[in-house]
Length: 192
Picture 1 (cartoon, helix red, strand yellow):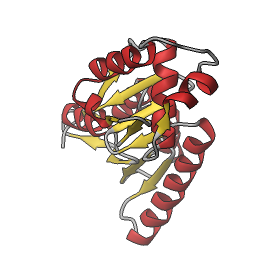
Picture 2 (cartoon, helix red, strand yellow):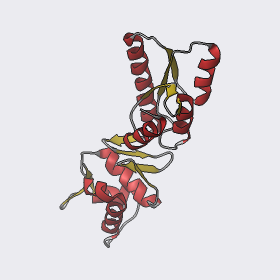
Picture 3 (spheres, one colour):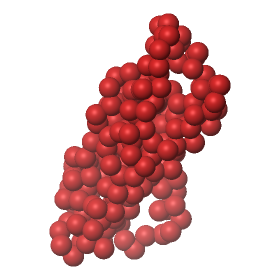
C-alpha cells in the first residue's frame, strides 16, 4: 500500500491501531505518521512503525514523527502482538477517561465536541443538540425519557414541541446515521 492510499484508508475506517512500514512506495512512514497526527480525529490513534533500520537516529525520527513504538525487522510476531495489545489497552483506557463514545462507525468526543459518522465529521450541531446526542449515545441501547432530557439535561420545563424539533434537526444533520435515533412512542428516544 502506498502513502496516499494508506492515509485514505486510515481516515475513512479510523482503525483502532495503525501498523506501517517506514519504507513506502511513494514516501516515508514518517511522513504518513505526521499526517495522521495532524488530523484532529486521528491524532490519538496508536501507531507502530516497522523498519529494517535499527540506528538510534532512525528510531528518533520515528518517535519525533509521532510513532508510539518502533520495531526493527525481522521481528517476532509475538513481540508485535504484545505491543499491539498494550497500545490498544492504553488507547481504550484513554478513551474511557476522555469520555469518547464509539458505536461501529460512529464516534462522539465531548472534549472536542466532534461527532464522526461514516468517516465524516459533523461540526454544525448546536450545543444543545450535541449534549442531547451525547446523552442518547451514552445511554444506548436504553431509552432516554423525554422527562429526563427536559428536566435533567436541559433543566427546563417545556410545553411545546422543542424537543421534537431538536431530534428532527439532529437526525437531519447526521444524514444516514440519523436513523439510529429511534422514537419510542410515549417513552422517549434511543440510539441504536
